[in-house]
Length: 326
Image (cartoon, rainbow, N blue to C red; front, side):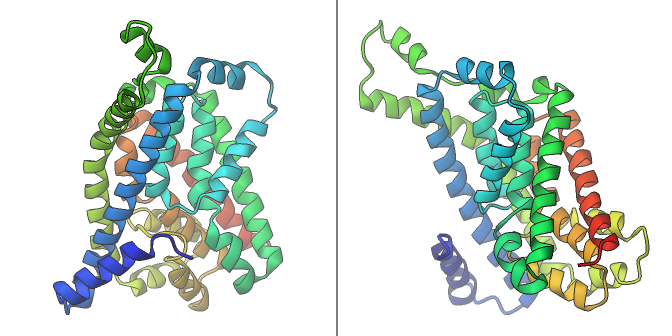
């Protein structure tokens, strides 16, 4: 069951029923814009509110100290990757949860492992890939995706770029702060709701304009960039096909299921499997709209590191599946 079906129904109704847009390019672009703006906006509101509650009750410093001081031997990164696998989000939709993790004091590398794994290993690779390419290939892709997500998170953590995170997302009111401001008296539920709404609303207002701009850009590309443009540029590619596919996937934006038809078409047109996978994973993991939204949460230095590390990981996946026959 698609929990976002009502939003898609509304987008279809608005485009086909109310606006009656006949042009297929504009119809696709506007449908995409309405659907993703509402979906990501709702996710942003709900997740930011839930994370405001978590930050209010959670002893952030203690959690951070536990994760940093104890030797987890990479298990914390593995858990973050599994959580990312279990969340059926595209790169834009997983950003609110990423921001919540950063605000809750979770180490930066662990949060980036989640951010990379969420779109990279997804419902398409887990449920659709086996029926198209078989269990062996699907298992290899998902295992490699988890490994790359963990490795990328570890690399980012070693670079110690915590100061590159927007400090506005790290300012929130804890339970102890609220009680202190209230003269040591117990905080009633109405006051708690006010605190949570204020914290969640502040972060949502910071990010949402970037969501609208990013989705608008993605909608235009989604509606007007023809599929054969990508096919014609990748089908004749040699060793440079994987880097080219990664670059071509950057301006585009689609969720993991939506890009499957394009992915199948590329393979059927003779594009090597690894090259097609590089294009698909770049589209769902490193889309320009997603990067524009992330820019509000971090500076250019951290964003560049994330893009570079993720691109290398995507190209590793591409070359692996071009060289290994399944």
